Image 1 (cartoon, rainbow, N blue to C red):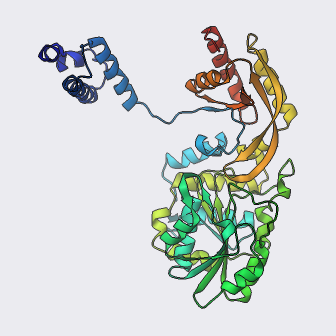
Image 2: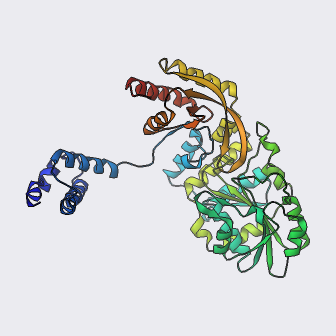
Length: 448
């Protein structure tokens, strides 16, 4: 063991091997690596000293700590709003406008007309209110924050009536009952998992009731022997009993969607026709913008939300405000091509097939074929509702193909024991890059 300790290279000598690296960083990493070698010698894990191996470890750790871990990937899963891959994309032109705002000073909280401090929420409120036909609007950093803020503001220490069939848990263990409890609201469950009637809500109302809340079933559906009360009826019940109504919509869309998706859920414009007190939804789901919680509703309630000191913990920065504002303007002008989520959703299968054919023409040695398939919108939107797509199915070991493509930052999927690249989510400007990666994998002559 003592002989191994004597063989450990001197730290100064190792540092000299990395003269082009930042000295303070490489010094810290080198000391940590050598300390680890000493520990491994003591525990018996290290039986010999390999200086080249130590140098490789130091180099890897340096590059790891000086490189960002978040990277661009090609989404070839076909799932448009893929939560694990960043949900909705941002249009480049919209992003460039937000970039200009964030790289220069701006009137974030300055009233140019009055020459004094202004309200950061005014910028998005006027566009969102016009777009959705609401009295006012407010944005926070995500929809979970919106739910918490609404409940804490209007139902702290009071009861909120919710159907048992809507007590959802979504990704990341976000559970509605737990969020309600954290906000200070008291959950009043009504109905059963599969059936909730109007009388269930009415029988639950008492002197401590503050609100009737509806929650969108973001990632599941209840079918068969089931029944639920529509939001229009909830609004009516709330008004008749002097209560607030609130809809945690989760995701919201505006134009009629293809593939009969609009028949499964009403658009947000249809919901807003009922003049709800408050609704909220995510900005980066079907709305196709940046992550944010968008709250719409009556001016008196939005004003009270702004007065809640908790809002400061949930407020968004100038980049988010600019991105939401530009996305809202694109919607107002019906320029839906500026919303990549919608653009992908509306792309025809004929167009997807052309892109797949182009890919195969660029990969002449690939053994694969174009197939018709189905995918999903994703992100807890339109759960279990399939949409048609086009994919390239690879011959060979599907698991190995998936692994090799993932190593090259391409995320595909395995279906029916075939590795697929689904062109619903592959961007037009990614096809040549995808073909290059494929050809490089084929040239490696790995047994796939």
